[in-house]
Length: 222
Image (cartoon, rainbow, N blue to C red):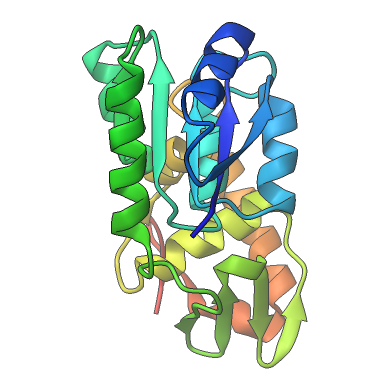
């Protein structure tokens, strides 16, 4: 079986070293040298695993991780020189599967990649459906349907809806959604969450009533 891996790394020497070391394996790499290019690839294609640097021109690795997690559960490995505990914890909180600090062993990295690919084989299936009420989401196709009609959502509204649907019945606080969808370094107010919820409800039409407001706390789907 062949696998397609997204490699996001702005240092050409590291990226070429990884691809050269694993050239005999059944892996095809798609290399992006900056974050904005990587985001475009994430929205247009599917990958079996992602290797992400954190510090990048354009969008950083954390933002790319959030975008991947908004559509799939494929393994994500951070490759970065940022080895502080808070960076690691933040990466895991966003949904990464491993955090490899530079410099690293190529043999160990290859072993990790192969282990994750074997482990994830068959766990993420196409046509997976997440459903709450009459809202259905198909993560592998970035498709949302409400009352049987396709709904067009902007990336932030899509990610917000997916998070709420995956945590059906649980309260999602404004602070939690700010961190998960905008990042720790976002310096705006929490009103941005309310504004996006308003847009989400409008896009969902009558089905928007499934997104409940929890007074003074946040939102919940039920």
